[in-house]
Image 1 (cartoon, rainbow, N blue to C red):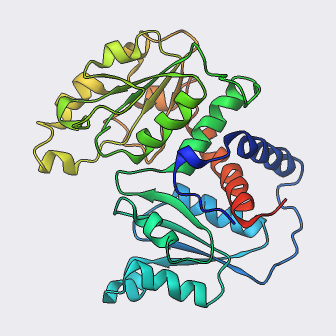
Image 2: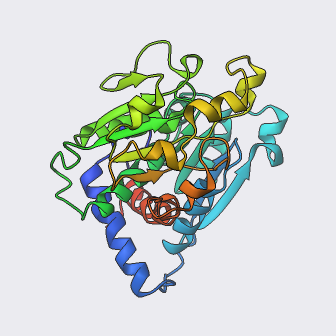
Length: 305
């Protein structure tokens, strides 16, 4: 059974189709009868989470598994237990899979080295968040009419990702999947919030207007306010002035441009209410699609048809 560790290793076409099968199935019957499997899937969350954790919990239940939620502060992790020993313990207790969110880049990869059960990366430091990128791609795939997922179906489309690129696992995973599908990806941030080394296959700019100009998709990223404490930003007002996605700035994009955000949203900082709640917003659609995508990746990792 495969691990889900990086976006590059995802069987994207298969997972898009699986997710859409679940969308149709749940639309027809929101609570389908499921035979309980008397088995556990561990959700090992070393960081807070709402959308990702809730989507994985729902996916477990809909597949007939019991989600065993383990947080760092309420487990032996708080006593100093290593990640590898926690994974070995869960394996010994017979869990079928382990979903991990961890502040350290590479933690799921280390976990996979000692695990008999598949490891699913739910976000590791500033490294990757493969299932978030997959649900973002699925959202665009649905928006553009479900083209053949084996083609470069985003060819000719410009996607602007604006925010804290340096620390964003979402941006890194999205860049992999969006460019694979043919998109032209622009990464935009203040100079202090760009990576030291440019990310491959992306256009990089510090000018939000340049990034948004003629964009088909604008994705805002959450601005972590602790960056100001680290001296990486002079003020939130400066960020709002230069990078906030507001109606005026969005006019630079194509008329049919859509807006995305992986959440949680800081309204009035990286995006205004008018844009987040506007007709172009796909933000709540992303949240709905999160359940379908987590169902698809769990099925795949567990080897279920």
